[in-house]
Length: 301
Length: 338
Image (tube, rainbow over all chains, first blue to last red; front, top):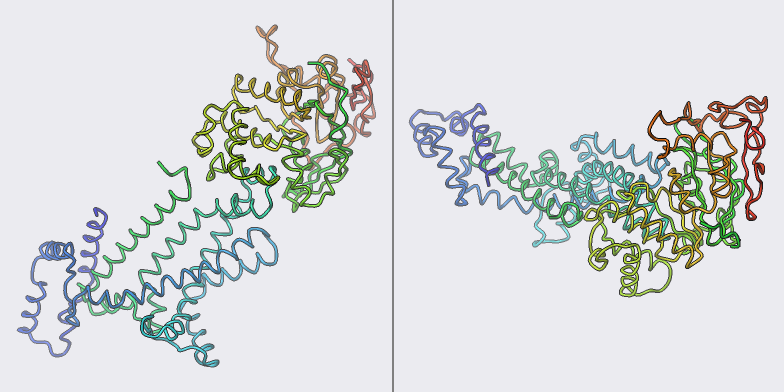
């Protein structure tokens, strides 16, 4: 809670520090002083900044994040509208990432410097360094254009049409999943490698455990902690919206919402979105901490 | 400690050689090591760090990473070839055939699994035993190694136990399948003397009750005098001297053994002077000297052959005591050229 209050102050300050006047932007060429003043008064922007903050913060505590300057909708409804799409993409991406990273990283660690390891290293380097928008465009060209197997973008809720939902989800999930997966692969490789070299693995072998059991319980089990950490970080990143991918695939997620809010200097929406990202980050950290204690008895107490 | 020489050979090692691939080139860590251990016999292996003691026993059980280690020679446990064994057969031998106690109790247990689990999985890996039964046996083993409140210890994690307690758990694991050979690699080095004495007593009891053969790797010559029947002195990956404890410790024939004994603090004469040390450092296994491995540090070198020809292990001194030969690999001649 203390953290959230701090985040709120910083967010509020930063948002208002950005040059540009939302009312002036909204009025554009139809500018006249009277309307401008009226709108300013209605949105509360004529108040001193400190007062604006406490007003906003007080309402935010009650769950009211204000009204968008641009559309007049409440910020909570705007976020609620975008949240399912973001959640869907984030979790699908992390699934893709883990499906790539865990097997690939493990095999690399088991056969360091082997052909597979080298290929995995090169692939994950490429995955980390290739720009997402480029990968997204290439995939669209191939699978939506040339092959025509998948739609090039858009979002359909699962409840409406599961088939269309999956079709539209696949490409963006692969793009973000490959990027996250590349990062996670490196972590899996190094943590499995480290676990393999631990003394207790030799003890396990020396008592005559089958190789598979040694690997599952004395290597993988111990490599789990760093995996949970990095997965949490990646998930937090994905949940705060992957702007570029959302734009390329016209995916109506929070990243796009935040970007539009920045462009329009739509303070309430921007503040609401960033506050939400902070909450998400804290929640994920909490979950990761809880998982830690479940995984490693040394942290329990 | 009387030598129970009557036992039949349990472990026979012949010309064991281990080469490791290291970043600084190939290292000859064990160079033609031959020895045997009989049932109910305790053989102490002594030598400085890096003399190849640990590697030589790890090699027997295939516990060296295959990517970096090349093991040649022969090793037979109860007549069965250890080095050429199928992986599955080797797995079956680890545990009931050979139990191994590792050096560092702080790292040799898995930190995320309970003590009970780590004992039970070892017991259940060798034969159809129910979980409850294995747990009961595990508790019994912990009692045997002198762990207080074994039932509770089973549900604890390694970090909740002290170093001494953990080492007893490691020993309990090694004993859990009643091995015919127990290898203890610096098993008591990390423990305080009273705990060490308890562990030594326990091993002594096993040896007399079950006829367990024991290889005790240590650099504590006090422990050697206390528990071993025979001693094998290793230097530069070779056995430079072996024989009964009395022969080797009382009448050392190799200048290196004499150096080791000279470096031992003697309570009777401790009031003055410094400890004798062996000048120089042990040879790097990547760059072993030709001839006798010890010559660059040897205080009595002089024979022309020292620097060129490797001395064979020959019977020395009083020769054979109770059927056990006293041998040394040196050109220094009978009883040493002192």
